[in-house]
Amino acid sequence: MQLIPVILSGGVGSRLWPVSRETHPKPFMTLPDGQKLIQKTFLRAARLDGVVEVLTVTNRELLFKTEDEYRTINEKGLPQSYILEPFGRNTAAAVAAAALQLRHSYGPEVVMLVLAADHLIQKEPAFRAAVAKASELASKGWLVTFGIEPRYPETGFGYIEAANDGDLGTGLRVERFVEKPDLKTAEAYLAAGNYFWNAGIFCFQVGAVIDEFRRHAGDVLDAIERTLEVSRYATSTGYSCLALEPESFGKVPDISIDYALMERSRKVATVPCDIGWSDIGSWNAVSELTQPDAQGNRFEGDVMAYGASDNYVTTENRLAALVGVQDLLVVDTPDALLIAHKDHAQDVKHIVKRLKEDGHAAHLLHRTVHRPWGTYTTLEDGDRFKIKRIVVKPRASLSLQMHHHRSEHWIVVSGMAVVVNDEQELMLNTNESTFIRAGHKHRLRNPGVIDLVLIEVQSGEYLGEDDIVRFEDNYGRCEAE
Image (cartoon, rainbow, N blue to C red; front, side, top):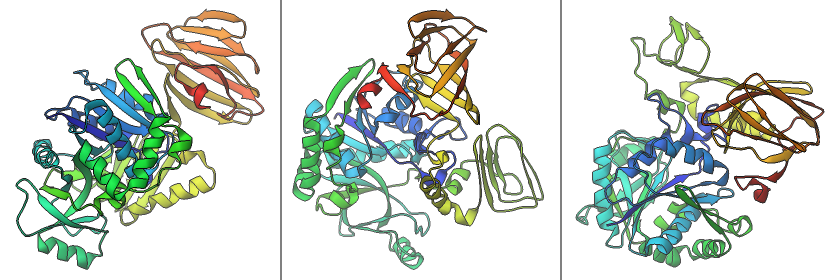
């Protein structure tokens, strides 16, 4: 049986700010063991039996960032493909697009396994066993969910009610999906024994799920089919991608797969399982990944404490000290600091909402920003000047571009640079520099096999990132603009 894992990588994870930002969302968070959530999801999927390809549905701005993360762990060279969304339209659109694309590539009988990029599964053997059971049911035409065996009366998850009257061999028939309950109801669900947490993991045969879309959510399927007809397919070294056309995609109904299909279909089954699942939905959940000390504190980074207990602290590049406090969440990043009580971990999203309303860049960007060619880090941002550290990957190149309002001075710190500066092309070695006037076309390229690192000093009346005109680009951004 051919199996295609489909990784949905679309959520921002606003409750995990300030680490999670719109351009560096939750799947790219580094966990205490050094791996990112999206890397763990890819590896978990790649190790399953029968996998011939991994398909990722993500925002087009995250393609190169995602591909970079996969490249470092995809040692076997498993084929990868992408569906690139211009913006989010919820999970029904993503699943429908993936199903139609896989039917085109593999036919209606291939089985797809839908995984969230930002969930953690700690019991991988149990997960593989659950996937085998789900695949067997899916091959018989069932739409399969993974029902997590509840450990306590959780009020923050949706539930699946399974039938008590017999089973399907490897799973149970789903009676209904239930919204997040109050505590009394959750306690009753736990006692009943046939209610399970809804993990948002799905498995179905491509032809079967398309048929059920046609029956219960035809408006979603029709809109996605029209979008695919006018979308652009391309291949590159090691992967292929389908870029969804924005105008048509904007007409797709914004609805989850649960509401659009799973709650309406009568062909839904669940595989009960205990796979060590967590949606890593708050800093409280993240803190559980770190072992506590004798006082119940959980620390990541350089932290000292005196008379402090039951706190979680993560700090990137400076010392944090706690004195006489308890039950705090402290998350320190280079440009933002979060301090919250553990009981209010879910309320962090309200800060992100305020930042967006106020137009503050901290909801969108980190100080270090990833680009297809590498990264830039803002070191200082003052009145009419900005200083950046730029790292260009080997053989990579920035676009041929021009700025109306700023000039730039580039100083090479390490590596070698080829610079186009108006009509001139020059080679810069370590400790050499060049000055680029506002209005000059320019380009930066790393011809070497090690990273190119340089310092950029910008000066001018306006230093916004939107003051850029691209003429040529290796990453398709001229067309996007």
